[in-house]
Amino acid sequence: MKSRRTKIPKDVADDIQFKSDLVCVVCEAPGDHIHHIDGNSSNNDPDNQVLLCFRHHDAATLKGSLSRKLSSGVLRKYREQHYKKVRQKRYVPPVIKGSKKLIQISEEVFFQLTMDALVCIEVEKIRVYFRRYDWKLI
Ligand SMILES: [Zn+2]
Image 1 (cartoon, rainbow, N blue to C red):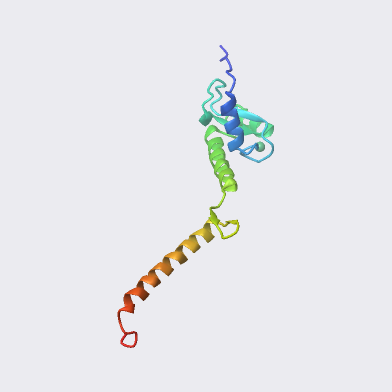
Image 2: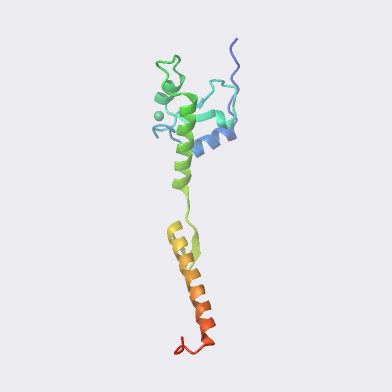
């Protein structure tokens, strides 16, 4: 008996396409098809789906141990790595409010500026503390 295919809900399909940046998670060619990893076309759990190009969709659906190139485990690894890469690509660094305009800086620069500010605060504490003493004695 053949299982009846249930259509992938639009919000799930939209989410998969967005997370994949519209490309195949294996080769980054345009994504042509949302593949059901477990082979059950009615299982529309987002964890069971991955966007693939036609070539990799064919590779994932080939049957037989010798010709099967993309197992469910390999597909999930490619998908997780690809989703991470897309998230990093879309990462927007923090914004610092300047005197005239907003300046975008990288996470590294933001960290360095924060550390510099903390050093300034500590130096000021030391300066205030030793103000009570005669610098010539120190
Ligand atoms: Zn591909």
